[in-house]
Amino acid sequence: MIELSGIHLHYPGQGDALHALRGIDLTIGAGEVFGIIGKSGAGKSSLVRTINLLNRPTEGQVRVAGVDLTALDTAGLRAARREIGMVFQHFNLLAARTVYGNVALPLELQGESPAAIRQRVMALLELVGLDGLAERYPAQISGGQKQRVGIARALACHPKVLLSDEATSSLDPETTRAILALLQRINRELGLTIVLITHQMQVIRQIAQRVAVMEAGRIVEQGAVLEVFTRPRQAITCSLIEEILPQRLPESVLAHVAARRAVLPPGNEGRLLRLTYAGEQAEQPVLSQLIRKHGVDANILHGQIDEIQGQAFGALAVYVSGPAPAVRAVAAGLTDAGVQVRDVTDAPDPA
Image 1 (cartoon, one colour):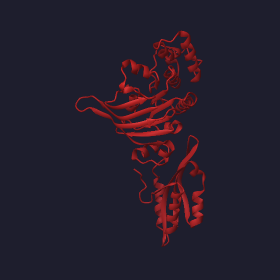
Image 2 (tube, one colour):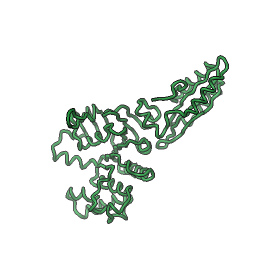
Image 3 (cartoon, one colour):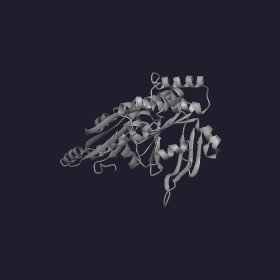
Image 4 (spheres, one colour):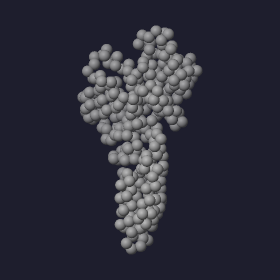
C-alpha cells in the first residue's frame, strides 16, 4: 500500500540545510496499523508528512496504492491526496464552523451535493460517537471530542490511508485509550491502512501491528510490535520501552544478588538472569522444569507481566544458584526454549 524508497529530506536554512530524513526505505501493507516512534527531533513527523507529500522529499520515491506521488503534477497530486486522510495533534478545526460544518468541509470542496454531504457527515458522526453534537462549535466540546471530529473529517472523502501525527499526545490517558480504540475499530471495519506517529510506547502497544523506531532521521529498528518489545536491538528502543517494561533493575535487587554471591559454597555459582518472553512462552512452565531437572535454586527477585493485543509478554529477574555446570545448563535450556536470556550479574545496565 505504501512504499518509501531512498527518502532524503533537507530543510533549507541559514548555513547548512537540516538533513531531516536520511535514506528511509519502508513498506507498509494494505490494512495494516503501522506505528512510527521516536523521541522529539527523530524525524517521525517529517516522515509521515512525506507520505502525502506535505513534505516533498529531496530525494527518493513515494508510492501509495501503486501510484508514484513524486511523479504527479499538481492536479494529480490533489486527486491522490483525497485517498489519504490526516489527523493532527492540535485538531486544526475551524472555530467558526460547527462539528457538522468541519466534517462537511472536504466534501464541499470536492463539490458534493448537500444531500450527499448530509448523508456522509451524519454517518461519520455516528461512527465516531458524536451524532448528538452536530450543531456544537469546537469551543463547546472536549479535547477528545475535537479529535473525534478530526477523525471524522479525515474519513470524509473515503480515504484508503489514514495518517495520525501525534493525534493523542494532547489527551489524557483515558481519552487516549478511547481514541485508539476508535482507530482500531475504524481499521477493522473499514479496512483502512493507518500510519501512527507517536513518542509513546503505550500507544504502539495498544494499536500497532508493526513498528519502526526512528533516531536522527533514520529507521534504526523495525518489526512486529511483540518482537520489538521483547527483543530490542538498539539502545534507543530500550529507552522507549522503559515506560512499559523497565530495562534497568532496582539497586535493591543488585545489592541482594551481591550479598548472596558473597556466601556461595566452593564450586557453586550464582547468576542473575533477566528473562524476556512473549506469547506461548509465557504460558509454559519452562523455568520450573529446568530447576527440577538440574537441581538448582532460583529466586524471582523482580518481574513484570503485561499484554500486547491479547498476547502476554514480560520480564523476570531470576537469581539462579547451584553447581556452576547446572547453572549454565539452566541458562542454555531457557534459550533453547525460546526465552531471551541476558546475564546481568556483572552488567545490569543495558544502556
